[in-house]
Length: 255
Image 1: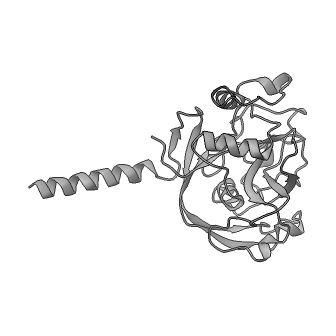
Image 2: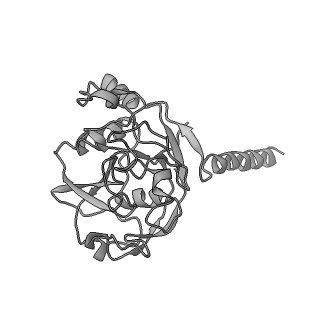
Image 3: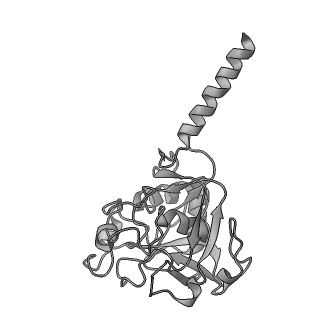
């Protein structure tokens, strides 16, 4: 009887764990106060989308990539309010924010890559790899954008020349907001314009060294040609990016 009860308990616990990690599950991270979405493992075509005539050479060739393990991804860009928590706890200096950018619900900007890395570590996570970012950003879509641009993103045509509060546009298929437009997002990889030619087909981690980092997603001032899920923007790691923000990934379950 005890063995049967124990087996039933194990099944129950396993069921709870599976439910907690169902695609689209949303949990709040108590550390930074932001919501995170469970992204299931899967396979997708990374790089230039079919029929996309705006692709640069560094987005080619399109290639099949498998993300073998699920992970948590910030449902929104890291906000000013969340970054204030980090700065207050870790003794970090806040970026110089002006005007609307100082609103707590705005995405944090003026973040260099190392600071983005340190924030995600503090929040119990990490910067996503470039492959994880694109897989999550596509949300199951094979198109250059997961919907009509005006409905899903803030960009030069509709942004009134300024950044906007997070989660005001339609989310993608995984329930993530602002993966296109509003502010650029740092990923963990070094930049190599030829990396796709020899990229591993499973969990590519990017080049082992380099001098430039990668930003993804486009920003409020960009034209549509930049606001595509496959577009890759390189930037010096120590350089300040006035439209550079972040979104964290996390491997460990959120209580």
